[in-house]
Image 1 (cartoon, rainbow, N blue to C red):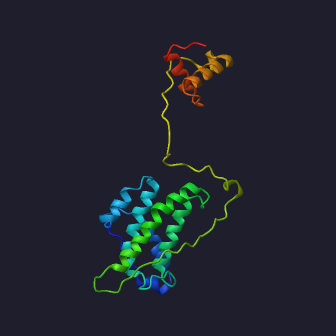
Image 2 (image 1 turned 30 degrees about the vertical axis):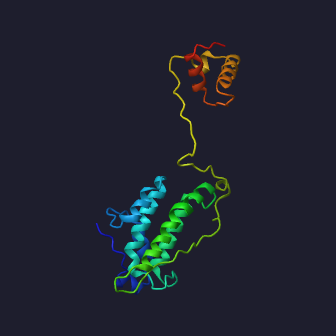
Image 3 (image 1 turned 90 degrees about the vertical axis):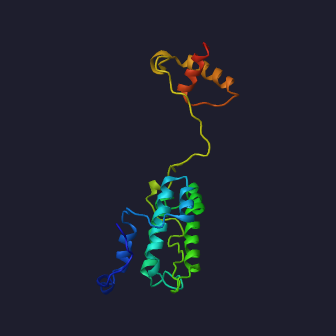
Length: 219
C-alpha cells in the first residue's frame, strides 16, 4: 500500500491541507520504502523499541512528503512541514511525559533529533534537477505542557536499564516465607547473605533463601 503525501484539490479548496497531512502521518504503514542505506543503519542501532518505531515513521513521513515542502525550509504557510513538526512534537511529549522524564528526554535528543537533522541535510544536498525542498525542525512545545497535578511527578519507565541483576527464582519447596519463617529467622538469613555478598543490600528475599539453603546455612 503506497502512501502519497499529496493534498488533493478538494482539500486545498476547503483549506484542509493540514488535516490531510496529519491523517497521512498518523496512518499505519505497511511499506517502508525509505528504510534503507544510512537511515536503516541509524534506526537499527536504536535500542529502545518505541524510539525505533518513531524513527522509522519519521524517515518515511519526511521523505514521502518532501516534494510538498518549501525551498527555504520554513514551516510557516506550509502545511506539510508544519504538520510533520507537530506530529513529531506529539511523539516527543508522549515519550518524555511532557519532558518530565529527563532520561527519556536525553534518549530522544540523542536519537530522534539527529535523524531529522540528517534528513534536512540530505534534502538540501540532493541534485535531481529540481528545486531543493526541505523542512526545518521547529519545536512547537519548548517547555513543559500543562498536566493534571497528579501526573506531574511521574514514575518514569526505564525501558532498557544500564545496570541490572538477574536473581535466581525462589525454589518452590525450600521455604515458605509467610508460613514457615519467623521474623527472627528472616533477620539471621538476611545478615548472613549480606556478609557473604560483601555487604550488598539485597531486597529480593527469594534470592536470600535460595542461596542460604543451597549452601546448607542454618539460622
